[in-house]
Figure 1 (cartoon, rainbow, N blue to C red):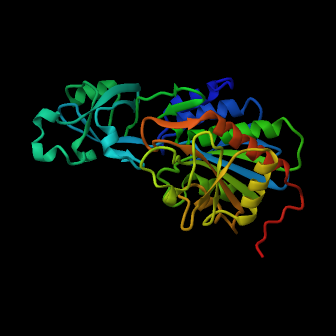
Figure 2: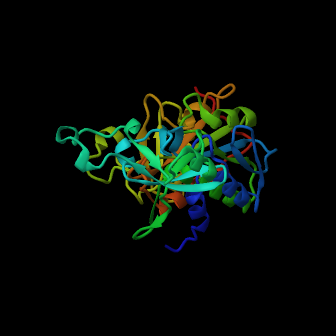
Figure 3: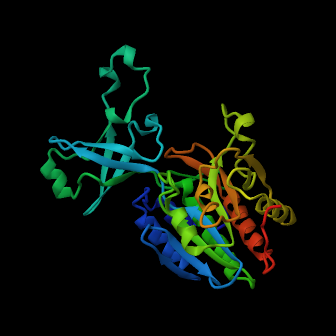
Length: 354
């Protein structure tokens, strides 16, 4: 793996579940400040800008939050009960190690469940439920939890740092969608190195995984009022067994970015992305989204009077698990595509629909 991905690794390893993105956001903002104007807002979005007063203004959005857990109850024996932050398959949680982000620092723990020996045979084939699981940090009482700085409302993440796999593939609990935040900043870095007419603001958006009303993306688009927006997220890689390509499309690790058509995406933005990819010999595939994209694009394209929006996704295996997997080449190709798209824009930008 020749490309330096140390920044990506720092970003993936920093904990930042939805609503508690601060630590991951600070890693992103520190990197952004090395070449761009950087700031944050009250929602938790973080921004980096190159030529922010120029027009057209392009918004590049990638959400920085990850799914996680939140403590809902501490019982008298020191065990912690929890709820999911974002969409979990409870089977993934059984037996995992976690980090509780307490007031006095991170507290290691494990997710407990009744041992298989003690589960009635007729119950063994039934799926585990979150309400039947708990976090055990080793404390024996509520007083010990207090000494550790752990209390109700604390978030937690699974203890699963980035690992480098064969070829250019990496796995992490936070691929979705810390890689999107990485990509928009890398695209902005490329923009900063070249002359151009368009202004660009990269946004590491907050609360996408729980953003049923638009999350931080809605606030960022309203505040910036961009002329066009590109959203970067992940989509399901279909190069593994038992994934229906007829439903999701054909998207492979290493196959390049995935361009979405329909729903929240503007047809002219899609065509310009596809044209740019062809000119740059960037491989890509196409995904249909007839109802919704379930990404920040759903909120951004309806901000203010409407924003012409494109959605560019990275194929991701094992979504919403501790071992999400992507190919680094897909991340780099996506950043290249975004930067090249920006370079094609000029003052005559017009995305009006016929």
